[in-house]
Length: 635
Image (cartoon, rainbow, N blue to C red):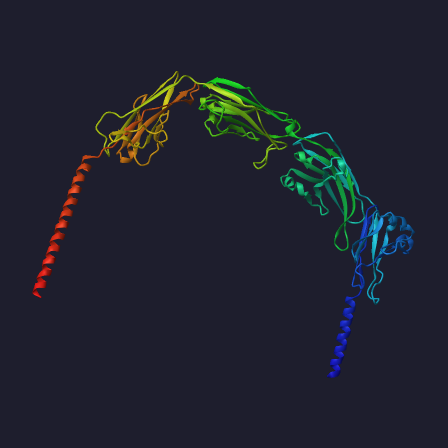
């Protein structure tokens, strides 16, 4: 038993010693080969060492076993010996074309700036020993195959530097091909340098900014640049591949509408990729072709908006109003959408036309030609907005009204390069024309209004209150009054002396309530829910308001307002703006006789009840006192 335990301990010790030795063995690694690289382009071979003893910074030596030298070993470069390179590499090492770049103390990479056909062969990475015992592997080999450079790139038309108007379409074409026995992929990238001259440095030594616009990557997927993703998602930037002659791929990039930020130097870049044995993609060749410079001319430099007639125009009410808006400076080669709006500020109610008020929209025409009207929807049948010519639009009001007076302005929003933009698309530029002042001459209109209570018995609660309003309109041509009745509380009287009580006129600041109206066309509107109210027209100038079953809430100060409406030659009614307010009439409701008789009855009954209760309480109190005295004597 003891012999068996001793044997197991010996085996375990040997096993652990072996594992420990293995863990501490030097291990040098290179990528798995063979590696195919293109002549004339860089070669990068990473090499690392692990499991070593000694300093953390290890030395590396590179050897090449050339295929054309019968596998003879040649020193390439060393990190510890400057005289290490063999004759074919001495000049290349001296000028830095062949060098070792250190990633860390135990990781380096062999860099060959321009690979040559004779560089093909097996590369060995060797690490001189710093270990106490010689264990593990001290070098590793990888085969490098040098394939010819067959990457070709060209363009069909270069940019000449001629300014391109904002919103114009830009099309760039780049052709590329590779002829390789190995399975390689081709990627294409269109980009822009902000330096503008295609050089690495701009004026004053400034480094230009390079931005990738759009690419077809090594996996044949379309990838937009970081700064162009939204435009790609909106369909404004596209890239497609076509089959060209001789097996060439033709790549076409389109910018639907160039912007000022698109100014710069454009290039096309083609890259050749290969899948290494470790399943990683490596770029083995790349060529960049400058296509030329682009300058985008901003639309604001050429665009102008004018309206006609210019200055001021005066019309008779009922006459047609025609305004024209013209957009100048739009490049003919740019297919742009226009949003045209007519805005108006001021009205006939202003003391001076156009000096205040909010600017409101009269009408608009969308880029797709749809016409919509502002708040005054009646204009849809009494006017039109048309596209007279390219960039020229007219607004017509068939019969101008006094409310049409004001300052008109044409507002144009340009969607450069977008004929039918979406609702979320921002306008490229918005400009306004100079204002056109429109004055409307109205006929002399005189309006008067008189309110009165018809003679009759005193108004009592529950009776019908009748108010007469005589509204007269004096003018030439057809006219009609529009009447509204208003009410507000009776103001409190003011006492100046002990015997001097003077009722005040209704204060102007008192809130008045419109209770009923009759429009010029006879339509009645009732605005109160608490009372039964009716309004009718007794004659051409006489209007009657009746409050049925009046309550105490119906008493107050009443007045009527009259507004004159005229009719133009086309039969369209319009508000002349002439108004009149009648005198105020006081409506006071007296109590009914039944209500007056109820007061003494209530008082009498209340008094009788009070006296009875007092008598009963007194008698009861006296009786209880006498009864108490009798009981005291008996004791």
